[in-house]
Length: 296
Ligand code: RIB
Image 1: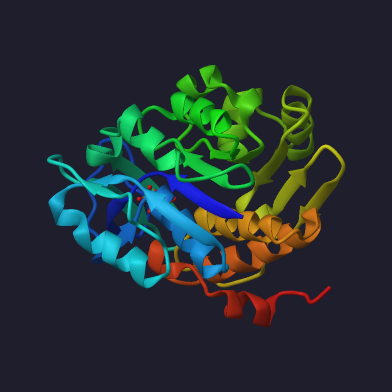
Image 2: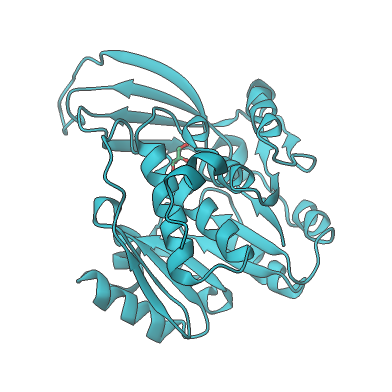
């Protein structure tokens, strides 16, 4: 299995704060750091770290070239990532004393993708390969349809999940990965098991993964359902945890592991991620996950 992620690359500006800023409030930060990020880049990094063959195709501005270098060093193929005459996407991220975050995105170059370029990328992949998408680039509904036209499996993490996602051709998605907020946006609020059942009823042919942060994760395929509690760790920074989870889950699925073993590896990887600062840089290696993961 090869994975092609058509997705975002962001420069993450991370501010350490006592609490997340409230409406009308001005607060001081105690630390400022710049990290490599973007859901596309983070998920591609996680796939590479997990041992998958992965390409990241996206757009950056000239000042974002270091993001591509970082991904290459992690083993991600970046040959289709282009420099355009628009600033690189960036994220303003607050991380509070408990490691929770809030994120404001500026899409920049991430939203300058063209259909012609995407067709050229997808033409290099074949049935059996996977197209991985998030919702930080333009043209996601067209990309889902194009992926299917090329015979690829489509994995979608509809984050951030605006109301427009409900109009996407989600029935063409093979693997849908959502958190509670995204699930609520698609099928309404409720208990996790209910949301999972509603997602399963709406997309019966798909595998659905519902991540719940510290409350673990559920997965449901047409033939099985599994749950895995979250790893118990000291939380430093939750940024990129969902991306790490997804990358390790997808890589394990590509290796033919059962649903519960995919969840277990993904959960261990996300636990390691939240114990470190940063996004792309906080993805653990496969060896670290092996060392902590259950061998069964
Ligand atoms: O999922 C975390 C990522 O969301 C950050 O790296 C940030 O860039 C935003 O895309």
